[in-house]
Image 1 (spheres, rainbow, N blue to C red):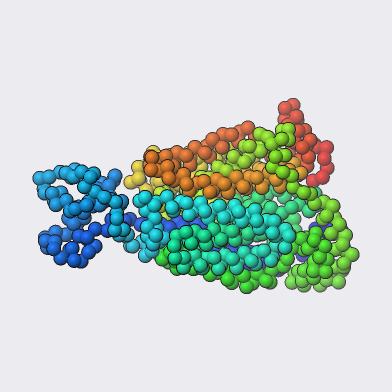
Image 2 (cartoon, rainbow, N blue to C red):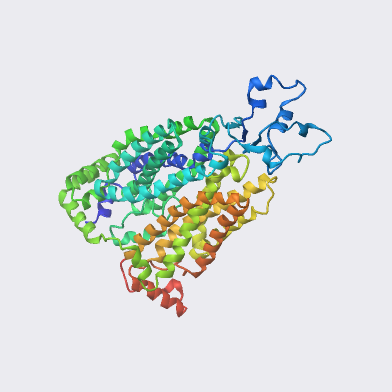
Length: 578
């Protein structure tokens, strides 16, 4: 008896699956706030140098009463690039001649200025406190902010490598429970970090836990039976396959719904982030608010059921039997409780072990004939998403003045982008949708180079449209990659793509440092990468209506049939394991 048959007996979509799904999707929403939080906790407020005439009461006592704050600012702070008060320099001595109506605004020399040796004064009208203001991450230290974001994103890359192996050894629920606790404790500790390096350390630990939650809640599931290979055709922006802890308890018919709801959890998390940040304007308190819910997640995670499939593969028959009986009881399948036996589980375990395959090495993708080009192009598409999406989405201040509204719009636009992509995949095909989504996103980013900063609404609209296109591109590449590669290499190909996306996410924030050499240079890079990746996707074959290949020979057969212009809908492969 296969595990899928056991699952049908205990209920593949019932009260248990609904409860388990809610218990896992709610943390996904809060997990998104951890990733997007530094749009607000690390926002850069308007600032200027501390100067005695404006900020020292003793010095102000000797100033003539006729002079107001604007006059004192004029003689204390030189004009910056936008003719506003310079953010990083001040006059060594007050330049009183600048108040002479017959003088000129340029009646001073660079030698008369100096850096902000006494610190900065920050505008606290929007945020009462940010990590930028707390640790002076401005001027010569402005590179530390994108570095902190890259450290966080590198933690996700490391955590994915670590907790993926750990969960396979110790089980999904135990690792998930630990990750909830680690995220809660590390996030809370970050709010009380005394120094910036300590803050980065705790954020790195939070990112490790974020990756662990994503790996065990939203990760690729090893296909235990041949028929499940078809599920690679369905995906979401959250992940190519969907909820692991729910997926392994859900019938095939309901998995598309489960994956869609899981994906929407990330979209709603974007809106939740804006809502919480709008009400909490202090970075430390915001860090506490988005971390505290994971203490509750830690408590109720002990109720979550361990994957019965994992228990069977590990030979833990008695525990697997108890979990199945518990699910049957919750779903009201009383008859199944009596029919579940150790013999049936033993039979399912044998099928699971016989069908499981060890993943191949990434080198096999490049060395296998006919797969090298597919590997390079699909990996580039994954990289383009992570690179541009996180480069833009973690610096909303550069995209518009109202970052709260922008954050909400990103989440709202993401919902129809995901649903629309799934529809377009069946209408336009995989390749056309992949090319269109990447090129559209890149063109929106490049168009922002031509829009004046005074047209904030237009810049914000283009940015949101571009980010929506990137969301659509990720949904597409998640599905497309699963169809491009044979079963024996599919897990390896998707895993390599996810690593490329995370590597791109790490590099994305650092590109903003190019702004020191040209204001539009970061946008040029962010826009060019998805456009070039989209054009490269034209080299990929169309996979719509084609059976999933099981072997490399199947891939080569598809290529030969395409060369002879055989109708895709009539393609028949030799392999019958679908």
